[in-house]
Image (cartoon, rainbow, N blue to C red):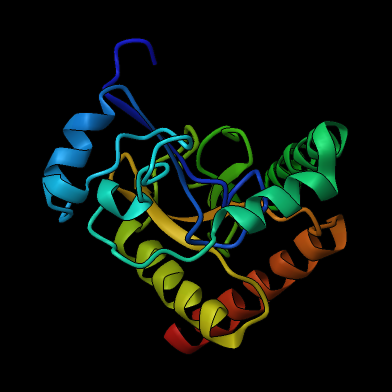
Amino acid sequence: MAQADSVALDPHKWLFVPVEAGLVLVRDAEAMRSAFSLVPPYIRQSGSAGDVYGPPWFSEYGFQQTRGFRALKVWMTMQQFGLKGYQAAIEENLALAGYLADRVRQSPDLALMAPPSLSVVCFRYVGDGSRTGSQSAAPDEEAIASLNRALLERLQLGGEAFLTSTELRGQFVLRACIVNHRSRREDVDRMLAAVRAIGREIARRNE
């Protein structure tokens, strides 16, 4: 951080704030202001609340001229949770990721594609018990990838759970990212049940 010109923080994950609230710390604020400001020099404010014009306008530090009070929802969320509340919620998210990874490891029709990383778990439906991504070779990588792509689309459109996807070592995987303070084990179980149900249906149709 000490070597960065700017550092950005998005509170919409582990600060549990809705999207479009962000923080940026800038080393040289005048360089940023010179790049974006449309305020002419004769009314540009010097940046002190005690001056005639008051503190600078936030609109001078970015391309968006009219800014809503996005900091309010960050402040209110921090007031609601507090430090201990955040600690407890994040620890619960981490525990749920561990729980999900364990459930996948124990399931012959699912394959854990990488060790859990914070609250992210990458896995996929393999159906026939082939542990794709483990020591054994994949029986038909393209078929499994195609099945999981179709599964993901059905799952998202169905609204039962929301997973995303990524590629690990060239393999298409389902990506669960647990960053909701209301998520519980029963939500993980429901998501896995939906994955299995959709996966079985697609596999039967393909056969």
